[in-house]
Each structure stands twice: as structure tokens, then as C-alpha cells.
Image (cartoon, rainbow over all chains, first blue to last red; front, side, top):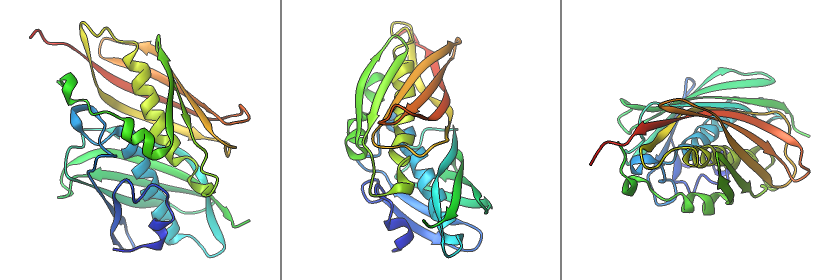
Length: 132
Length: 131
């Protein structure tokens, strides 16, 4: 699925990230395992890349709900808990907005392609403000 | 338990995101991250990856490779409290060691040497099995 919101992110292409689905409740991104994003223990997707992927997913989710004339200023806080090595061919990111305002908070679960196994649970908070 | 050959290289990750290894020794690791001046709200994306790379590298210098093995990041968090100017320097220091974990503190400063981010991570370490 083509998405201009996602296309503004500089590493989305090289990391193999695309938009899977979007509705009122959540946004789902897909990341294909490739030679760039692998680099973790047990030949898994690199943990730092997973955190950056969650950060991108959170931004895309916030941008989908942001008011006209406002923009994300910067990521403020990010936390990641790694539950299992991410070894599947595709890693899905399910992003749920928990709060929208001057501070926006998104929870992101990183899962395998069946959405049954969770590899990583993240929470991302961003500051939002008027476009300069 | 991961065998050494099961650890993939992170060099392609670093090249793709503009991350450069500067040094790593004695429980400390330092990385440089190129500035993303074109994308102001995206400036932290590569830094977020670099924080994990730095904490893993720092932990790797604080284990006994004869008796222990690296087993993966358990969790980490970062707070970015200012907008960085120019490139970022990510410095990770192992601040505590237990039997199975290493605690790593991370600081991030910009080209003006202004501290703009702090983080902390937990890395899992396991005993090597006799082969």
C-alpha cells in the first residue's frame, strides 16, 4: 500500500518498511527481512532497527490523526522491551494511539506475520506543535 | 544459546543509517551519527538504533568471553529532551553487572556538545556451556 505519510521517512525504503493497513483503531506496517535490517543475536533483526521501526510506526500513526496546521516536533521518549529474537521473514508493527495532544503517546507491538507471536513491545511519546 | 557464527554483522545497518563506530573498550562504547538536516522531525531515528548498538558494544567489552556469551538486549529506554544540532555522539557506559545482566547508561550529545538525550538499557549475558 502506498502512503505519503510513510514515504517522508528517510529509512523506510532501505529497511523494507511498507504500510499494511490503516483504520481508526490502529496502523499496521510491514518490514521485510533484508541484508540491512538483520544484525541481531541468533541472526535476528537488529534490536536497534526494531526500535527505529517502532519509532517510525508511531510517527505514521500520529501523522494519521494530527490536526491540520500541526506537526510532530520530535520523539520525546521511547522504550522497548524485547521478548524474543525477531527471526521471521516479515515483522509487523501494530501501532495504537493512546493519547493525542501536545504530547502524543503510541504503543507499538512488533509481531511475526501471523500477528500471533510478539517479539517486542514499545512505547513512543512525541511532542506535537504548530507548524513553524 | 547463540553461537558466535549466529551473530550477524551490524556493519550494513551502520552504513545504511549513517552510523560510525568510534571506539569501544573497558565497558564503554562511542558511536557517531550523521545529522539528518533535511528531516527535522526524523533526527532521532538513526540515533535510536545507535543507542542499542552502543549499549550492546559496551556490554560486549564488559563480559568474560572465556566463560560468558552475549544473549541480546532485554530492554532499553531513551529520553530526548532537546532538538539536536548537527551530528550526534552516542556514548554508552556499563554501570552495573550481575550474574546474568549488564546495565548500560547512554548519553547523547550534539555537534555543540549539548547533552540532548539520556538512556538506559539492560543486556542479557549467559554462561557458556562446556562444548
